[in-house]
Image (cartoon, rainbow, N blue to C red; front, top):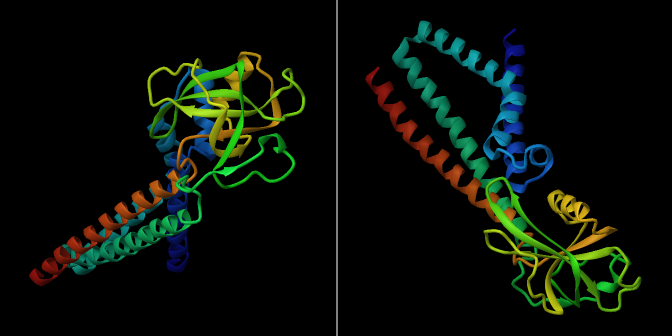
Length: 287
């Protein structure tokens, strides 16, 4: 029975860790089930509750394991108090908490370091842009580097949206763009869209777009909110379409966010572990 209880304890801890990590990643990157729930709420109610969308599903999914861990901790505390006395038992509990807090802190900092190392291989927009013939889109892989394209904005083929994400609200304009030399004529579905962030407030589509645009190309990169707005205005889009994201570092931000958060929380856990270690020693000396 003791071995079976240890298995359930390990499985419960792993499950809570996996669920918490998944929902943290989904909320930060606006991906997965978090994005699906957010977009469903937006379609139904015109917006969504950021914290509730991240916390409530995680609690529901990890709830049984959390309840089991709480009950297990209460039983272990009662048994230790009965066998060792409350003072010694409290000192030993603090020792165990120190160990697990230190392990979790080091692991979290390693995750942050890994995210930073991965960011070194992701284009950050600081280098020179590569000239690219956007009329050839669809004939090969999309370039990963920042590119410069030439063409012109399509009149009356733009929309503006205010996107609410996990931790930010951003305003953006999405304008249809015809690359130089594109086949199909002016009546062909829009295949290339230029994204421009407007820095808050209510964005307006009536903005000047130079013939030369620079950014990162993303295949089928329009968010669902923008796709719905294009459909509502009966603006035909090609399949696949391509988004030119002009904001610098658009692909690397998530790595920096994960590295910063993981490093901060890992440092806090290690610091708390050190404080608890001193407290545990003081309790055991008094005993």
